[in-house]
Amino acid sequence: MSDTTEISEERASHEPGHRRPRFGLSGGDGTVTTGRLVIRITVLGVAAALALWAAFPLVDQGNWIGLGILVAVTALLFYIYLSPRAIPAKYLIPGTLFLIAFQVVPVIYTVTTAFTNFGDGHRGTKQEAITAIQDASVRQVPGSTVYVLSIATTGDPASGDLVFLLTDPGTDAFFAGTAGGLRELPAGAVQADPAGKIQQAQGYTILTIGQAAARSPEIAAFKVPTQAGALYSQGLSRAFEGAPQQTYEAGCDCIRDAVSGRTWTADESDGSFVDQQGQRLAQGWKVNVGLRNFTDVVTDQEIRSSFLKMLLWNFVFAGGTVLITFALGLVVAITLNRPGMRGQRVYRSLIILPYAMPAVVMLLVWRDMFNTEFGLINRMTGLEVNWFGTPPTAQIAVLLVQLWLGYNYMFLVCTGALQSIPADLTEAASIDGARPLYAFRTVTFPLLLIALAPLLISSFAFNFNNFAGIYLVSGGGPFPPDNPNAGATDILITYTYRLAFGGAGAQYGFAAAVSVFIFVIVATVSIIGFRRTRSLEEIN
Image (cartoon, rainbow, N blue to C red; front, top):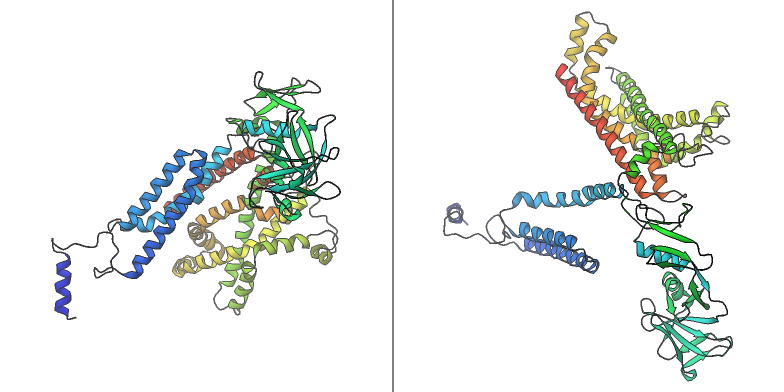
């Protein structure tokens, strides 16, 4: 095609009568490209499939707000990627959606959880708590029969409706128990072994041991209603007729024990059933507790004492780590930045090498090096220090580990900052008679701070939440005998982790409240630090 023809087509594309492709599936010359068409159809098809997959659970749960948001987002995606005009949005929308999904939504969920009692014993609704309490109190009905049990299903062994095939050992009668009740089976439709366990039954599929084990949670929760209560499984070979000892009474909104007559009344503010002595049943439900999780940090004496100690150590750990790593990194950078020094590349490579190693592995190695009996540090120095046995030595140990892991990063950034400072400034200071130390303090160091202050602030924020640096080295210990949740080297993030996932019982609501405190503290320190950085720039 000649140049004249190309110019004519280009002019024609801008004429009023010329129509561009409606949905923006064209290439640069105005023609529809197969590759772009296939990519867009594929991407939008995947988006539509994901939206349809997510819509069914929302409809089942009656979450119409979530369904509306899903429909709106899907429609927006189709509009943007089928429109030839929304060019910037085509690049901004994916990142924005990922930001909302993986940053904004978790933050909102954490904040909302901080205002609840969500945790072990308070995970579900009140009705789920009542069901759990009644099921946990089931006892065998006196004088009732213990049946020989076979687990069966009327459909697919992995997903079909469960059926209890039962044999009465006293009468050799056969029964089929479903969620609707119990019915007797004709003897001719059943084959059983000498012990009475049903091996075959017409219309039913007997589950093997492996198939039954795979559905053990369903089997444990399954029950067959009877006049005296319900039939419950006892393992995979026996079933008994039982009735709950503790039942819910709607009139008093309470749980009543049928044997002792003891009563636990519902406390809606706490999400628990409480008796007259203030003792609570272990199973409760999730409720909104307002600011209680936040006020407990201030008002509860035990929590307040532990929180303040950890907060102080958290600042010491984060600030101390930044200070010692920056100081050593700066000294090494100045030393290796001297002109004419031999072997600079070799030294720099050796210093950077530990920084390239996986931090998790290095933390575990250092933990073993501090071992009292066979640790490398005690063996090389001839000491017998129980590094993680006392608070001071444990705190020194974790700081030494952070020094080894962090100074090489500071060395890198200090080296770059030093090399960016014009040599004319220091030469002018020396000509004016300034000594090297004075020139460094008045010229070089202020310029370094301007360049490195944002990095130091971000390093402080990182170490303030340096979970691995504490948890993998000292585990937060040592712990006082009266408080196994707050150790001498615990920082707020490890304390939060132990509250949420510790063996003493998860307290997600309180852990979320502590996370909010951490966010506020780090944000405040960062804002103050950046303001000081701007002031420093204005002064210089």
